[in-house]
Length: 387
Image (cartoon, rainbow, N blue to C red; front, side, top):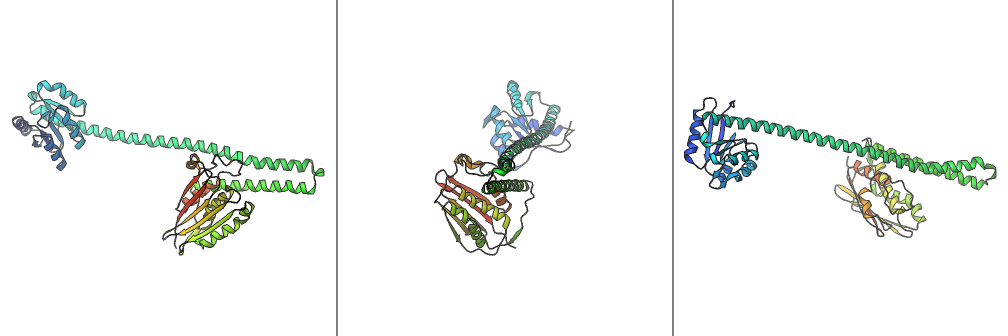
């Protein structure tokens, strides 16, 4: 079948007589129009392919600067979409067949070439290459879709596993305060007449504290759910950031006094007018300060630093407490995950997950550096939002 446009051929042949013969055959062709450019060396062919485009390459397998199959790789690398028809002498037919196996579209034995054979081979090579390229494109598309679908299935499996683990951990963390409530309520119900007023008061306090802990846990889980579903909306207001940080420190004083901790706050640079989401900031800084206090040793120190930049602010919260093992740092911001060295220190493992969600919602980033027995430093950078 003839190709319906003028076919541009690059002939790589060092024998001028054979080159002229092939050119004459192409002139005699009635069914197709051809234009031929002739070069004698592989190097010339590569230069020509860099400058111009061709529909097909006719390649002699014996060239002054390349022998046999060594001509194929540079040509296929240089022009992967152009079909190649190899030209060979009668005794090189096995070599020609191997060339086809390695990527050439066809081969011609020079002594058997005539007008019809040459035209048919050239047109066949072009059509075969086009089909191969189409198949390759289809295969690549299918492969991409398979990879995408596989990734979706893996993600879905991971999500299902995470949901299962999430429910399991949530059930575990709710069970503890529920048991406290059931135990205290049972004692009050069954032994009310035998209990002193002070004991009754203590049991009621235990119940209130357990309910408060459950409510706090459910609030944190709800917050994580909103963040994951994209329902976490920022509400920006004008805020005196330095005064806000000082307020958080004042609120933390009771906890620091209980452990005899020194909390030092410093502010560096001038803060221009900006807007912030107060709720997100409270989640971020409140959780990080709370953790610094929780994991500090009695009599220790906590450094809270606010640094103003031209387009952002940075918060450093550093403690010299128990530190975090290196193997735990990668998963530290996962819900319910807690470092292996926390021991009996209470916590749900949701605080840092919430911090990260809030930082991301504010368009910022969070980093952590820690060493067991030395301490931990969290760095939060948030962009300045202006009205």
